[in-house]
Length: 222
Length: 227
Image (cartoon, rainbow over all chains, first blue to last red; front, side):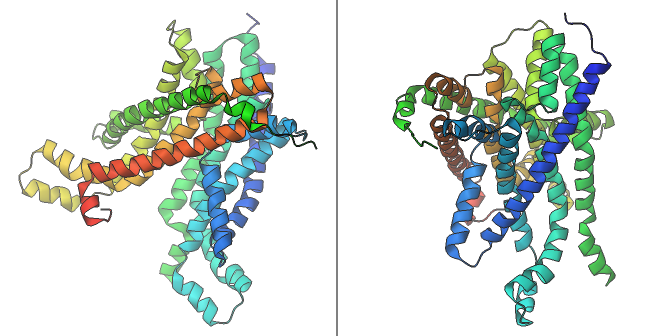
């Protein structure tokens, strides 16, 4: 129909793949910062903050990312706020990731053994000192394998940005397919590229998990 | 910024939303049932002593878990078409969701199998239970009971993910929303409403799975504790 797959098409796909990586990093960074705040709110001493943040997590985890994308891209302009596809996709991913990472990290905070919190309190450290000097360094080690694993989810979910017209890997595949009409070949290539991005992270996360985290090894040595 | 919300115009379209929600639940139900079957078979396959079978199941799980659902749906949709097979969008959507969730359930159920202590199986052998009896009573049921919470959250995620099938024009909830917003120009209200419907659906599914758990795992009901 429109010719065959050539180097230009592959370049275009490569460019799309770069945007997939870029969007994933935006989601990880934005969602990571927001998720950290969510996690802190979930273990806050204030009951109302805990309830509100739990409500936020429930709301976001009960809504498909696709609907969040549509809401930001089509819904906000209806309210008079103009958003570009990149802004809509970045904001949606940030919201989505913050709920999931917030919940994962809350679990990590809570799995730091209770005596560590008590000992830190017994040493008369302030709340922020306890957090920064005692809990956080241990929680980060517990959090590393599931966070790396969740990065795979982020990369896969960036494909949904294609529905608001953001040209990342899936969208660039659709565009090429519209001119060549070789869907099976093109979507197989797309799938292989996603696999190449995600599989190393999956393996790495699995390896970290199997090792039981560096924390435990050092404890055994000591 | 002129805030001028009109939910009434959207709410009067409730029969369409209801149809979409029913279709979403149907997709989720089909994929949950078939996905569980695939998951059990896949988990048995992954533990198979036959290296080729174990390898194929492993490749299936890794291929699905490391690629986006959207791309899988396009592959099934266009792949079937290029083989000359014509199916409705609903059938393709159900098939793609089943293939997708099957990989996740395979991995979850396999983890359940791995958590059965070797001693339990040896004890069952000592009691002269047959291979089939051991597999069913000592391995399968306790394994599924152990991973039941992870399985059910996976199925709720699947229901939410079924929104992606709107991209191949399956007439589920998100597709209905897309249609209504393009018809009424009330995008914000439409998607807020749809988000609320999804939240209700996920709460309903969670409650349903909790009740189902009480029915199929009587031990949990009697003792009030998980295994």
